[in-house]
Image (cartoon, rainbow, N blue to C red; front, side, top):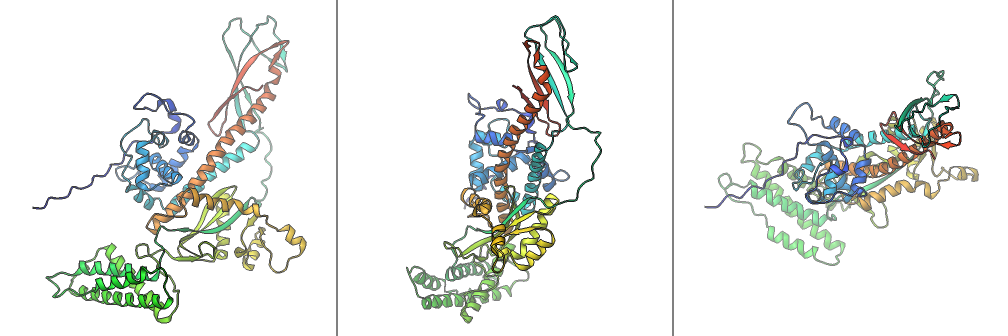
Length: 564
């Protein structure tokens, strides 16, 4: 008697509740051995700088798991895992293994201590990508950038109302009381610390409200398109026909039942494979030999498809599941396309399939020196202040000029105003786009039409360095984060994969901006409080040592500094 195979067990995801990062500190992380985590580690620094609360709130709105079901996974665990995966360019299994083995990564995703168990099964990442599709990831990305933009604007504007708490300790107590700038400082004869709270109003709230000016165009938008190649074998007609033929043989083996059918159809699979290998193993081959080999494989595939349709006649209901039925539709489409190109002696056809396992992938002619044709999704990305936005993704080739105005409208939807300038390639600078941008008072920086005058050429000239940022985003994504080899197999999950890479690129930039904003805000407050408390620094000939603490009203952050 044959023994039953043991089923593989899957790791159940933890349902630990989300804890705000403000409630935990680094020394609280429990380690299984002596020692503690280093505060200089990249994952510790990144965890302290990301706006987790904002990201978790956006994630909960997109997933909507609070009303029904058994409750979702900790949002920080999910988002942190996606960030680790794309920053390190790992597969799903490798990502879970790295988190399971690395204490710093566990701290990054919000664990309170080291754990030897995996956070969840790697297959769950596929379901997460299905639910967090391209639109949901883009929504998270846009709201994160909006949060950073508002924070930057507040840090560069006039300092808002704030409370300054002054704490001073006199070195030498004088018996006489002195006044400085009409402000009296009372001293006690004891050595206790005296706390004086003074409300400093930097912005007068009783000012007359000025009329709000009309919205004007602001900012500069850089736009470009690229292709994200899929992780598929380089397609040739001969290989594609061979894959379709083998899949048709698998369907024939599944559909044939001795109780329903008299004799199993003969597929000549050994002869077909022998003919395929005879041509595929050649180092070089002529066009005539390739055409002859393709014709033979088309004949084998035509026979197999006819046998499949004959086997269907004996069934009362559809015997194939959705996956098998999808493969049947794909191989029928491949047969029709290949037969059309073979009969008409052409090399192209509309909506051409290049992989039977990923039928949504299309060939995109780019005209590059290294890769004239790429196989993957074509994306259009716009750049504003260094932040990348995924404006469009299509599996079919499209003319970039037809999508420019849609990106301009998305710019207005995100920021509330149109861009002042648009930097684009020559392919975007069509007459229609120039006319529409001129009506919106948007300056198009690109090559002018016709033979331009010297003054116009100098005025609208785009220096090579001005468009480098968006090329840098493409290079960063393809070199460091795996955007040159998308390993997802579905169209939906591939879109989520690409959007996640752009979100990670923005998060890396955000962390640097947050650090810069903290330093800048600290310096502004230091300079402000130095001017406010300058009269209090000296009492006669005795200097008073003091420090102050400032609470920033709209960020919830407290800064302490010495205004020396």
